[in-house]
Image 1 (tube, helix red, strand yellow):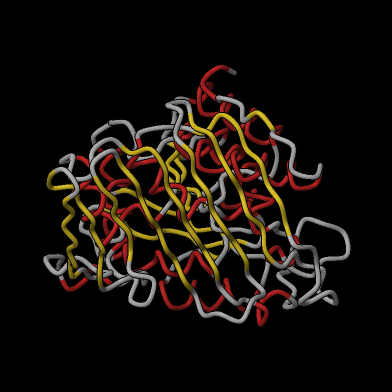
Image 2: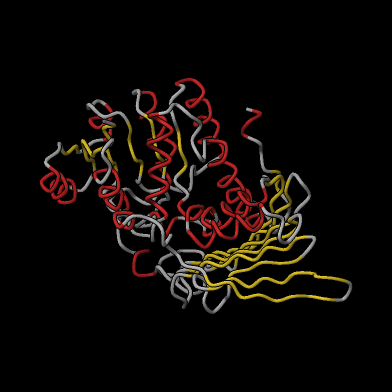
Length: 358
């Protein structure tokens, strides 16, 4: 039985049903700086509640889900692995290049499992897109665009108890440059391209929508990959739009994209069928896997996190490579850090380091 601890019981609480719903894992301890949150879940589950992360790391757990504010992700993952615990890390992986270097060293030094919890890679409609790419339906990928827009102003000024990571900002969401959160859509894009970014350029629109909070309105990144592909993404969390993900892929034989007006229900495909001839297709899709068992929706985000947790538990029990290891997590995260550096420098290109070379 894999005994799992969770730190950060806001986002982290969504994993409880997924681990407890399996015959080979269980939640064995919880941790949060907020007394009310930790005591609530400890009472519900009948497990120990820890006020400090040090206590959780010293407890009888085999693995820890790190769901604290992003500025703490690398620090907590390193601390957990140094204490002999496998880790499932929420996104983004790191807050700085220095964090990333230390994280890679800790994974290598301890030999423990580090899995990056990018749930978007498990959404059913994106798995369908991935399958079409693998089958060569649109040829070799050359270009992609993505957007992650989500009005989160109701959360930006809500203190998270950990200072947000930047002086004067009440929460981590207020402190977070939007492009840091590009992992949700660039993770799946890089997965489908089987590629990594080597150069990043960025621009942002400043703090004009909610200057009292101090959050950046919108941030765009333009990236060059190791294979010579180009990717663009737009991120923003204070704009008038409900949560919205969108991905568009261009290949040598056609293009494939989520329908902008029904992004989780339909894919648009355009294929070259002959000289001057093109075929347009609408493919119905769903957010959740229709063949998943009923308990697969216990974590929210459709069935995505059911499969993600399954991969995490399996990689520990079978001693295999995590589905998304530390290098994948950093490939998905470092490009956002570098794009923000570029935006702060007026858009000049910034080289994205390869963590495999550290």
